[in-house]
Length: 168
Image 1: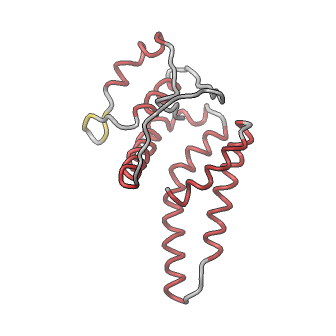
Image 2: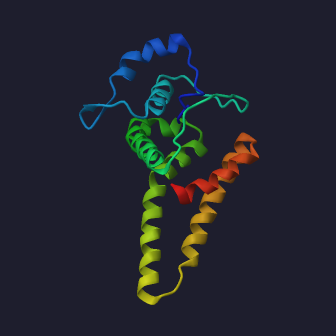
């Protein structure tokens, strides 16, 4: 659902068809310039084009070197995910079942993680017991999601994304 900016390539003819829609991004009534890669990917999919994963693609990009810029980046990406999910909602039944579940998980996951964390904190404060099951459940869900992605992409390294959940 998101062809990452540094790695994405588009046919000029396809881009020309969608350029007006792409340049007219709005969020809450104001022009928006975040999440442009996800937005363009969804516009392409809505127009009937397809995306393809190329495992040996290599690209250079600028990444945050400290926690504050990293957190701002993650917040922009989260807003983009939520905003563009509404744009893509009607597409989901036409897409691969895994992709549909992944998009739903990207949107429900943070909510469930927040609720689980609050419940775990409440358990710790109320009865003083350590909420091991909450942590294990979150770890298991993350590992399963990343394992399925690793199997589908035939890339064992994708399991490493499990480490991203606690940071996120």
